[in-house]
Length: 431
Image (cartoon, rainbow, N blue to C red; front, side, top):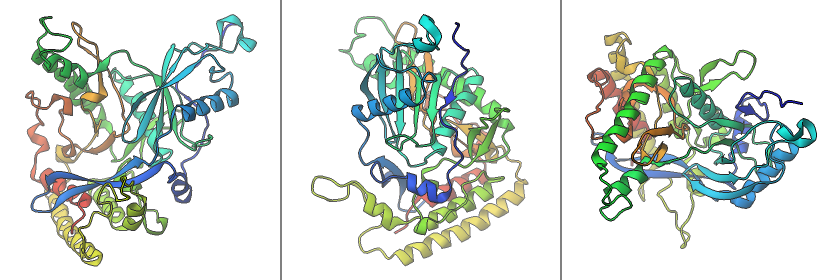
């Protein structure tokens, strides 16, 4: 009997978006810690920006990954043909996810579909497990966005299975996806620039390779994706209706600020936002509702038991009431400026129109072939992708910085400059 035709990706367990109570419960402190990362850059004359960031309190290990695979292979056979015959090893780790390499998969469930197996999977896969800072929403957004940009013929990994329900022994969301052959662009460029590296004497022009990769990235993200996202009318993040229609739609925004713990677990609007003033106001309300004491208590500690970061974002002796007063004063002033600017340009400025951005397109998220065919094989890690005002990210991706691919003048209007200042100020914890 021939194996059935399977259309990937498979959403292993259908689930509705969690309520606020369910979301807070799924932000399990066993795995998740909230920190504040301080940047060197400043916003005008304000203190350095301190960004709320999720982090692993303890990341899952290989044993945990095997437990997950055994669970899915046992619960969903023959949907997921992983019944034995595979090895799991650590592959890579980021701030909010861990990747495991799954090798030598035994293809198919021969008890049902015979020797041909029930479906064909590659011999190597990556299991991506995410820290539960935005449970359900994070994986749903990443999967939908990856599918959307793939339809634009932007090279991305193929996703085979995903689960955004957290209904597994670890309570974590995950994606099983294709492993793209190649190496990260930043690793290749480091090797090319090393005079004693593996390309010594091989007549490879590092500058030419870098410019070629930058040009490719600009074509994919600053032209194809930019043009396609002109159809969006709201700000937020991308999701997919997994029912019969399979339509894409804009839903709640995936942003660290908007999922940080709030006082009493109060629920504040995460979007989608119909206009940029609504987006700013929603983010401000969330900013004022963040429970900094809870973030401070959850911060990882060093070997001396001291916080690794200034997790409450305040200097010693700072008055929290005075801090709130200053933030509200900043908001009142900038809200008035934004409203005036919005009325002046009638909301038609290109700089304030919805556009999709990758959000984190550095050299580590661009997989390329080594020389002589140094071409982009895939752009990965779309978990930070959002639909934002065009001015909030330059049209050129990070990997193209310094190669003449600068933002267009139309994204640098007075409105966009003021909005960028105001938005950054929301992330600044004023002492």
